Image (cartoon, rainbow, N blue to C red; front, side, top):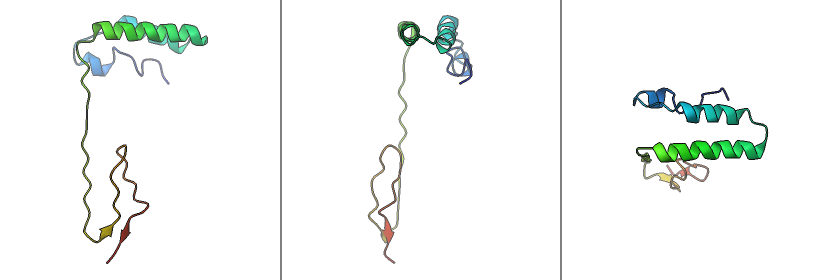
Length: 92
């Protein structure tokens, strides 16, 4: 994964005129840290900074609809945004 891919100063936040150079630097350092415990400590620092400075975290929910004709039988409900059509059949 290229450095900065999940960075906090990238385009998604830049549009909101925010910058997070310290967490970005910590993320870069953590990506290159071979020691698992040190890497975990760096990620915890990033999480704490983001938590302390976050204005709001807004969850996003999308609604999906599926429709079918009456002659399509055994249409299952969607699960995890996936339509499993394995048991469906057409009675026409």
